[in-house]
Image (tube, rainbow, N blue to C red; front, side, top):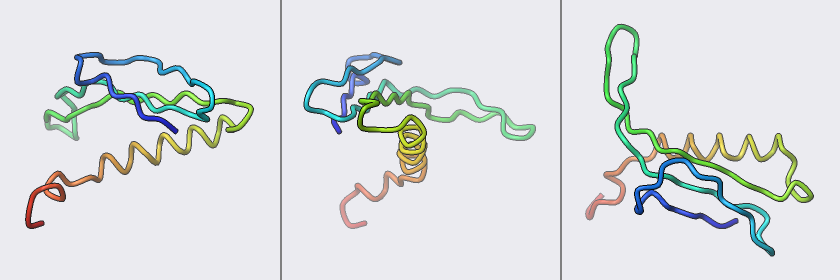
Length: 87
């Protein structure tokens, strides 16, 4: 599996192309703050487009969907403080 990050170039959503001998590729686009309604409160939430392309001869569609959902959930739980020195 390869990761393609075009977010640093300002690209939002895009479709990454699987190249032989890859089985899959994850595309990560530019994140941005988006207003989100939580109950009766509007807050800004960082949103980042993700895409997963994969070879259907190797990966079942349901498995691909479960994987990208798991990958997204791990990014949602990630604490930036884990990257800071001394943490």
